Structures are given as structure tokens and as C-alpha cells.
Image (cartoon, rainbow, N blue to C red; front, side):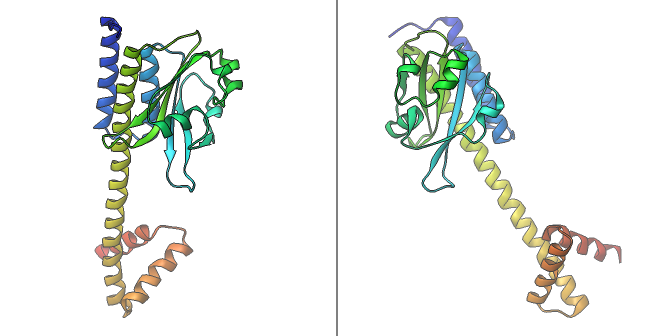
Length: 237
């Protein structure tokens, strides 16, 4: 196994620290993904990094390109593959890194036009895995010269990828938690607004709810906004 050059090791540690800080931050997922590809490209010295995430909201599931640097943003839009398709599909299904010395000669590589345009030659694809070994995506690193990605390099990129997976999972959990909190707060506000309507207009609970719902549709406002307006009017009286 190759020795790690101290300067290279320091870069990786700095990169891991940057991603670790993201784990406890309140950045949006899109910002987290951009940070991951930028940090990975910087610490590895590769030309391009791309990050693909599995989309579990569709059936059958797909893996979508979510972030990259040094590529036209238009390229990122709506790019997806089946889970068993292409290099990223191979990495997902086999749950281990895949090194390709020449992407233009690799049948599984689906982005040959992009590779020609950008002058890309070699790549390594590494799974984004969480502690239970579930793969949530793939991190790709490309070079513009032939490169065999030695074991030490692959191990360090894998460490970055695993740290990135934690940051992504944490961000998704934070978003879900916020959504749940907002839903609970909305329900409480609507219930209080219903009580006001039941008292003021002599309505039962279902009628009061439908009244709020209708105003929400008529005025194109959320039920929360309608409920807050009712509560404010109650305070002003």
C-alpha cells in the first residue's frame, strides 16, 4: 500500500472537516451536495467530481445526477439512469468502488460525449454508504490524464464519500423534522381557528373546517394563513 504524502493527507483531513461541519449545519441539501463535489475535487486534485443520488420516490427507483462542478449547469438537469444501468448503476449494485482507466473504451460508461468535450480519461466511482451499508448514491471523480487511482487514494475518497453520505442523510432528516413540525403547528392553528368559528358562527367542527378550507381555496392561501388571520382578528377584537 502506498504511503500517503503528508500534504495530501492534510488536504483530505481539511476536506473531511468541511463536510463534518455541514453535518451539523442547516444548509439546504442542494448546498450540501455542491459543497461535497467542490471539496472532493479540491482535495483530490481531479478535474471533475459528480454526485448521483438514488431517487426512492419513483418506481422503479432511479439514480439521478444531483451535483457537479466544472460542467455546464444545464448538463445536470434531468439526467437519470436505472439502478442497474451504467457505471453508477454498477457501483450501486456491487457496493464497491469501480476504477476505469479509459472511459471512452468502457461500454458501461454512458456519458462519452461529455467526456470527449471535457477531455476526460480515467475515473473512479465510489458508493455513498451509511452505517448500515445502505447505498444512497455514487461519487465519481474524473481525471484528464490516464490514472490508476492507487488503493490509498481510493480509500481516502471512500472516506470522503461516507462522510458525505452522513451529511446528506442528516440534512434529509432535518428537512423531514421541519416539515413535521410545521404540519403539527398548522394543525394546532387550524384547531384554534375552528373553535373561533364554532363560537362566532355557531358551526360544528366539520363545518368550521370546511369554511377554512373554502377560504383557503377562494383566496389561494394556505389553511395556515387563513387560520392565522382568524386568530389575529380575534386578538384585535
